[in-house]
Length: 112
Image (cartoon, rainbow, N blue to C red; front, top):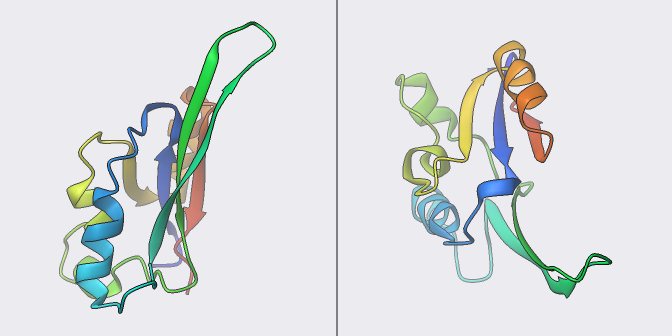
């Protein structure tokens, strides 16, 4: 799993929180604990007078990238259930190529 990672394209996240719910159920986490959490940045008016609101899904220290699901050949729960399709689980090499095309994105290394 060390050559794999999670790509998140923040530009198109709608803030639906489906990744949070899917992860919480998969890990059977108690209230207040999350494997991934969606932060809200904004709303605020930028210097051009336009309003900005960005949602930022962020894996926490409880995230194990659904190691059991991945071993079975399935996607991590957050990726599988992402309604906007902004999450990709793949090799770091492939994710780096994808990130070149999407500057408002981040890659999290799945290294244990």
